[in-house]
Image (cartoon, rainbow, N blue to C red):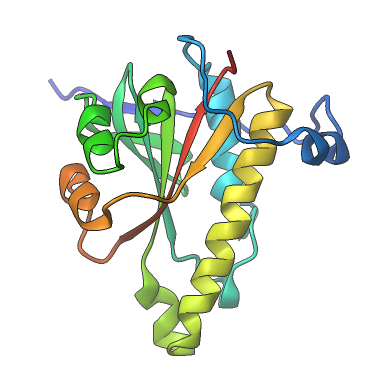
Length: 195
């Protein structure tokens, strides 16, 4: 018997209870998290804000609509997942908690461990650079910034805290996560309920 290890995500909500201005004003880096799981509907909303689909386009601008980003999530209670944007599901890659291995190569930043989830943003540069040449690198970096900011603002809207992580050994974390060769890790975001 085949066991389905995918998690079907909720449909996004298009109207929240906080204004965009309120979320911008209240956004700040949070490094202390409560030991409380984040509800699936909130995880769904965070991932939708990052790269969700709205008809044929996504929630962030992308040069030439080439969409080089791929998103993964480490949930310390459920495992490591790939966000399948097309089908709006989380595909389980391993049910092992990889956070202690990640932290080892993220210079022992404790909030990675304390956060219930960590979103790992990766990119396939070739999707953009095959069309735009070296300038495509810049376009990918623009897109990762748009994506990350959406996540941070959505976190505020959901009553969550977040902190961006840029200090990590890309090669070692990519090895630990067993990511495809074409992907580069660019950004990690810790998320949880603030203490």
